[in-house]
Length: 221
Ligand SMILES: C[S@@+](CC[C@H](N)C(=O)[O-])C[C@H]1O[C@@H](n2cnc3c(N)ncnc32)[C@H](O)[C@@H]1O
Image 1: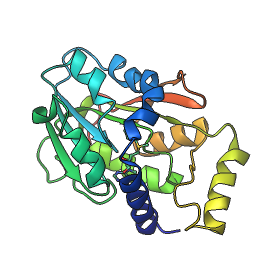
Image 2: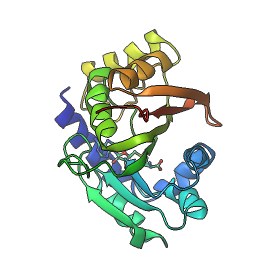
Image 3: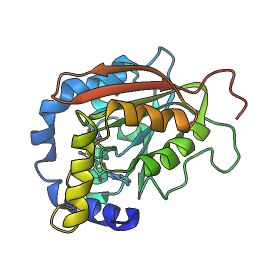
Image 4: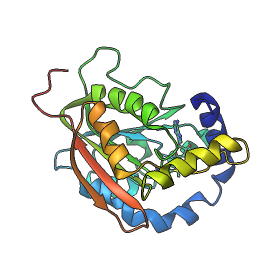
């Protein structure tokens, strides 16, 4: 299935799931908190990919009340919930596909973001799609900036291949099937994009890991 169609299906899925989303996803809160815990003191600008209703921003604003966030999501319905949160005046919401919408800094202005964060949003894409996305993230992080992704992970290469096989067989029926990568494939995608992987840490939820990678200070990109 091509990426554009995949994202159209994901958008329709999450628009439908917005009501009641927080009640279901609150059980992942411990994993979402791990993003905030991994950020250094002094963080001021954060890019959140697949921010949804902004659950991971609740602990972020508890620790960093002054932080500015750019929150990208396909689903305008999910973002509408985010805009009701008490910290919404410090969040710029961008309604669109993170493979397509331009990120601040891609126009040649100096990289601004201290970190890219994402939770439960990047487990639908092929390694090739991820390298393409992660290169763009790398380009908009300032040197020393962090990539922090708390997400599902395939247990082994066979499990990774199975998700993509099922999706290819009945793409409409399984529009939202999870296709997570293994730890190895995820780290390879990050390294191909230019990142140095600092750690991969298991999280409280089953099969969830925190990927922490850095754009090294010495980078000349
Ligand atoms: C399971 S929700 C996670 C939301 C939030 N990060 C959280 O942890 O509660 C996944 C979100 O990623 C968004 N998403 C998936 N693919 C996307 C894409 N290509 N561009 C923008 N948003 C995307 C969906 O619309 C959805 O809101």
